[in-house]
Image (cartoon, rainbow, N blue to C red; front, side, top):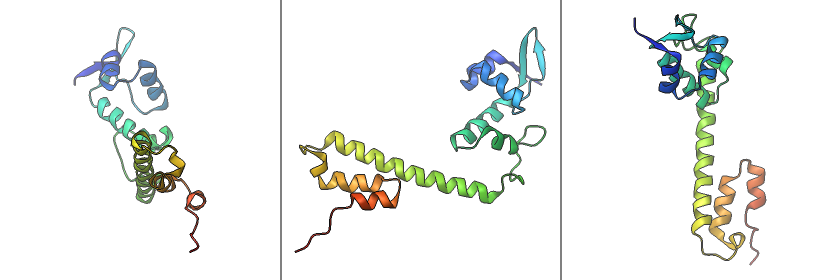
Length: 149
């Protein structure tokens, strides 16, 4: 069994050693030996850290991520505390967030490139602003007023 010490694990994972010790305190990872005062981990701890980073990136709490591992700290989905429906719901939330971020990106690009003297007078800006709104009520407020001809 090949072991990796905490410093090498920190470099490989781009996490500070304090975070690794914190994850160990929470039971997310486990050191299996010591070399002097330095903790040592199995190489598969890198996979666990990658999964933890993925979970954090998806918006899960460390407690929720811990629930995704079995007692040997191996991925074990679905778990009773986080059923597949919860994972699907989170995926849908991420899709909504991705669409909103894409709208914000388009809006910022337009602002940077639009030659209009006032962005509020630019119809494309207002349309992009409306699309980037987080709520339908706010989007309706930004909708152009209905014309009466």
